[in-house]
Length: 151
Image 1 (cartoon, rainbow, N blue to C red):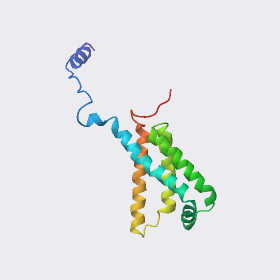
Image 2: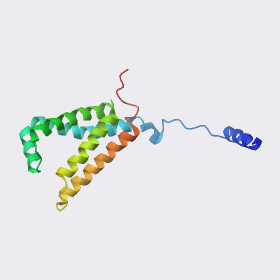
Image 3: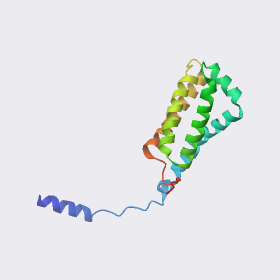
Image 4: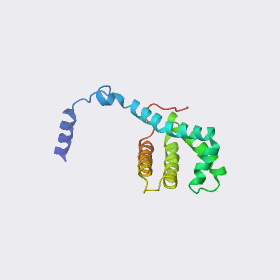
């Protein structure tokens, strides 16, 4: 017991001071999550606004894949992509927005990109899985230091 106390004291005095986080890759620790959120959210915001601008084309695309009730699912998809996309972009409840988008993307992936005989669909399927992976990182680690946090 007595030696343990001396060992921990000795170890504590031999510690080297840590480098400040303003050099090398550590200097980007505040900006990388913001850049990742901008890139991830841009896909969903673009898609949501595109659905608003071309609702008939979007409904026809959805119906071509056998989706019923496109009149209902279209406004739900628009609302989800824009609201959760903004949440992710601004970092305001980013984990919740990322979770909603991950679930949405997972479902959409199996509806629209499950024809594995087509190489383009295989790529789209894998791309969506990669997007889900990025969203899972936001769910796990949060929005980062640069985010809108109203008081």
